[in-house]
Amino acid sequence: MVRKAALLALATVLLLGGQSAQAVSDTRPARDVVGGLVAPQGKFPWAVRLSMGCGGTLVEPRVVLTAGHCVGGTGKNSSIVVTAGVTDLKSRRAQTAQSEQVIRAEGFVNEVRGDDWAVVRLDKPLHLPTLPIGREPIGEGRYVVMGWGQTREDSIQQEDRLHYATVRTVPDERCATSYQKAGVALVPDEQFCAGSPGVDTCQGDSGGPMIGHGRHGEWVQVGIVSWGLGCARDGYPGVYTQISTFRPAIKAAVRKLR
Ligand code: ARG
Image (cartoon, rainbow, N blue to C red):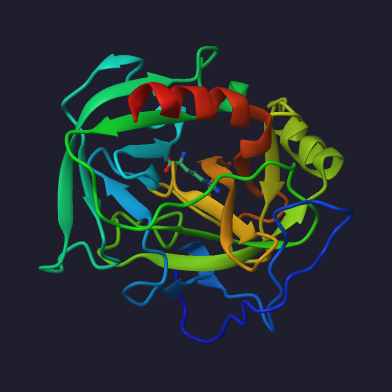
């Protein structure tokens, strides 16, 4: 995920057709989670790392939102260690918690088929900011993605430091046509695609957030890193879980675990 260069100016809130989580505007796309930048401590305080090698977000002090394919299924689960409060996982300031219980989307089969979300209850509340989840379907534009996953498709390592990048949404039809060539049918309501040349999420970023700006400039989660064919390949953007589609189900699951 990373080359130095590009500075993100995550400033302007673009109002796109009355959507409530907006694309971010930036001067230049950051090229690097392939193509990203190292996040300074404190920039994304609700971003967490899960021990099976996924990302997640703190949506309640005791509940993490991640991808369905990152967890084994619904039920009691004490196998996941959550590292929070740091962008550098090796930092002494890292807070950890253990999972207690998991709820995975009911219809989940595999990430390609959609329903790719899950929530995890922690054994203790973490005293960190939480990230709100978006109400409206994602609008066209640029959004921020992040993770501790590979910075290249052929990399064999995960990163100690959180990387982030901006990626542009890709129209459903265009993405569907690409993936059709690879023999995969997208699930349009449940998934959307995003990626910019040389910029993408990659293995190990799954479960992490895609974020845009809310009405007051605050970060709002609009997607969950789900899958892709390789990483940052031309014509094959990253595929993300459409948060707004699952908002009622996610909210209900969070309520059960809170
Ligand atoms: N499934 C991957 C994971 O478990 C995420 C892959 C995202 N790939 C992409 N090209 N955007 O970490």
